[in-house]
Length: 354
Image (cartoon, helix red, strand yellow):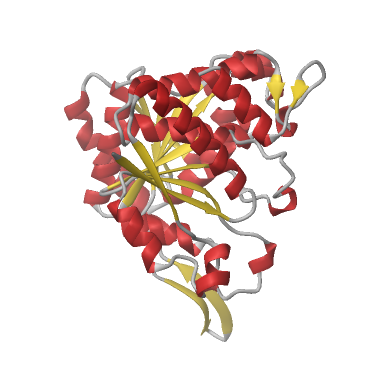
């Protein structure tokens, strides 16, 4: 048996993870994967129950699992909670506790959805890229000070730093990912300004010789942001640090027309974690209108990367594509001439197509 820990989290998290689990159960029947599920709390929901966003029992269960399927955390309900106990600390704690050092975000624009993109159809048709983001280093995990007095003025600061082993680890994963795709890697930094970026670029360049079959180029982060908007089809795999990856992956996500469709995988030293990239959307929680496809596609990534069940993963992805090609939509991607369905109903359509 393969154990999957499900963490619904907050807001629409329960609805979208429920949908993904139903799809996993259906694909399990077809491919005899032997999946079993265990549900645990994290985020604001956990804070309300236990006084902390990531209970030790949740982290321990994740460490013992074969994979983690995560919903979303956060909401205005917890805006007044102190920084150390905010719901978002749960995902940071999971990254640290599970050694989730790399986030993979695929962006694939399906033919049925080219008109949903804010970019022209001729720019986005055929876009198929992956952003590989370093996840446990950089400014998000560096030393910080929220308030101090210097020269008579209050200031705050955050420290950006990277070590060579951290850059090597994420770069090797990015090169290997490119080898499995179209063999092109773009490394993104700000080496004209930042010392950490100059170390990053030197390290990436040194590893180039080990991957002579992969074409490597470098872009400054501001240029990369522009290129994603004007010529996204040029990219195959993009590798970058934590801060830049956070921003660029959200920009790339909207190319497809809705972040509700975007999955992600956080690859770990122990257990890996899979989640949609969108937030908890508490304003629509419980209304049966949330788009579960990002979570369902994250479940496909779970099968691919953690369970090595490639055929089952492709079956889920094909079922989602057929559902969209047949004209079924959730509210966030609805347009005239298509059929609007709720969370439960569109999940059912995807299961039918398995």
